Image 1 (tube, one colour):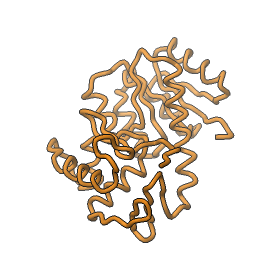
Image 2: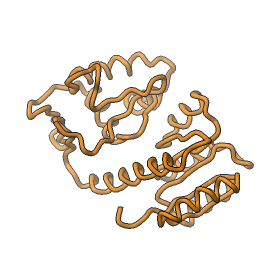
Image 3: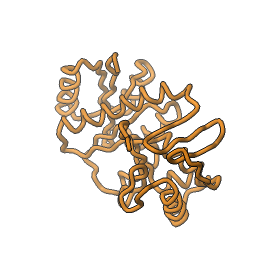
Amino acid sequence: MDKKSTILIIEDDQYISNFIAVSLEKEKYRVVSGKSATEGLFLFSSHQPDIILLDLGLPDRDGLEVIGELRKKSEVPILVVSARGQEKEKIEALDMGVNDYITKPFHMGELMARIRVAERNLLKYAHEKYETAFSAGRLTVDYDKRRVTLSDQEIHLTPIEYKLLLLLINNRGKVLTHNYILKHVWGYESTDTQNVRVYMANLRRKIEEKTASPRYILTEVGVGYRFSDDFDLTE
């Protein structure tokens, strides 16, 4: 992006908050910081940041509640930066719509890389609001005609498979949990993920050249799936 993003840090540990802020400001980002959920939500409303870095262990409210509040208002990219590294909590945050999850302690280089991914997605989605097709490598999806082609050969997808593919493409680079997929494709939540696994396997057989080493639909073991965010997908 030509103009650096405004990043909101919601973190009660002053040392960590300052460390992240100084590192971001060195890279010419505009940074605003809040030490609590209440302050963070106020700063979100008043500054309209491009990206949010959120700790889950806040003094006044749980960070998961903050995610819920934010997602009622906006689809702004949320990157959780938290000491809570248990798989259950990661899945819960991803279920609620966060874009990424970085576990403390972390290397600043890793966090910067995740922020750059979020920036690329912001730019990409801004452009794609007016696009009628998606293309990556051999795969093309014509939204207007609801037509999917692989190497210029049309492939038939069932309505569920097509809906699943669009959900993945529209969230590419973002890990979608099994429960998130069930909610947005089938309209319900469940601990039974068999439907997701079956349809994902069918979709892969249709669009992947090698299902054992997929290029498009990547598995996040124990969590869900992610559509590749490699913008240079080529033959």
